[in-house]
Image (cartoon, rainbow, N blue to C red; front, side, top):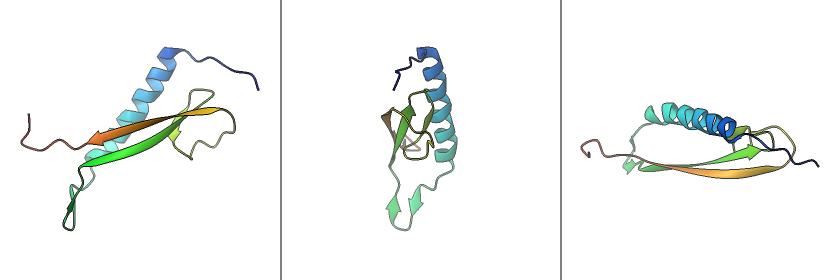
Length: 80
């Protein structure tokens, strides 16, 4: 297997696009489910050898990969 390098700027753009898409999705997520309150969401992502960022396990390409974990904590409505 040949190791490929990816430009930091390209990886940055892909991570930003992934996080922005997650932000849009999470902003529409219910705050309460029954008597439970959703306070944080943890999402595992995979970065493959070509720099593609996807939900862990949904990348679809075989090859080397690494992982990132994003933890989103819901901000209280009244908090600054």
